[in-house]
Length: 416
Image 1 (cartoon, rainbow, N blue to C red):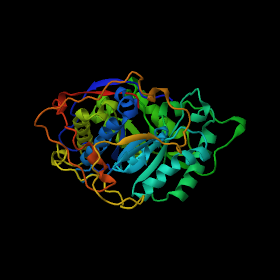
Image 2: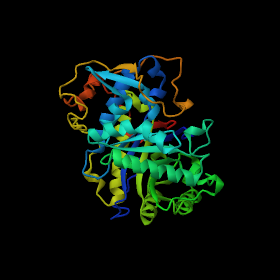
Image 3: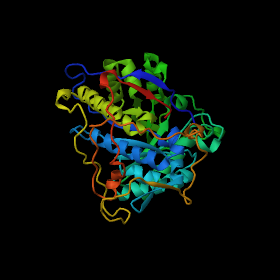
Image 4: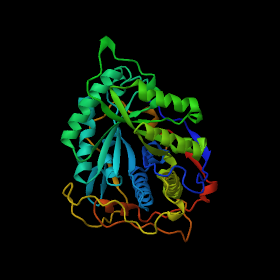
């Protein structure tokens, strides 16, 4: 699977006085793609690293919902991570189940190339999300792969459309209140994807899909944006692109005015825009402040584009955590505060592998210990008391290390 290139960029303020595009409401939501399993530290301390990752999700959720702006926190979770159980205070759940409790939408990266396999591998995660008042989506791959069953590329556009329609039908039936739809990784690979063999045609129905825009230097150019709009036309009538997931790194590079123009052009095509944030370094508690600062910058950027006064929005995360409040009893667990210091990681013997694991998601075998640096006097985060949302108390003892001022911080956007 092809993932985004590693880009190091200065985080800079994108805000300009006043509203850039008053009345536009199609820019909303943020997609967070952070993968704790890719870190060196995970192999030596999976429980501790995963606990810090849940702390990140809690902090990002609180930061995102700190204002009245519409939109959701979407968290990417590769389905192959569901091979692992984590036990917190006697409650055992899979990776996807824990993640879904700290997101509005869990976007399951589902590397299969047919509806039956997609539903089989991602369906249980969506069922859990629905039982706990969450939403779910699948992201499918269109890149060139050594493992043909992990990508739709060799199937062609028409067959992919038919398989996604079947997936949509099945998931809309099995998880009607949770199912959001499918997203495609990514616009460049999809644009060059061949037609299906043997004259297969599109189904008469149209399937709604979102599409990821990759991190790449050429994404800054007008020609690249034109290619994106050309993709809208080339895939019809089989697909309707109703969502664009655009990297924040690229929004910074093209500048706020150009990004606002892209949002306006997307609105003309009846598509919403989400902002993608990806940094595996954010897994660790010392980096959570960078994630929160970036979330706040994105919220203010969106407020400016939508015509909301960005000065009315908080410039830092909330001092107390409310966090997501999953439906009590969604999986039969009582509501009580966990006291376990850290989760216990075990292998999930019943998990269904969803295609070959992406090699870039394999932890480095020479593991080192977790970062433990702390700064005296910095606040310790507090977490809710519900058993499901309260799982965050497993990292309550982690002290956040304050980073440098956001305007001058440097973030590393690694492979997503």
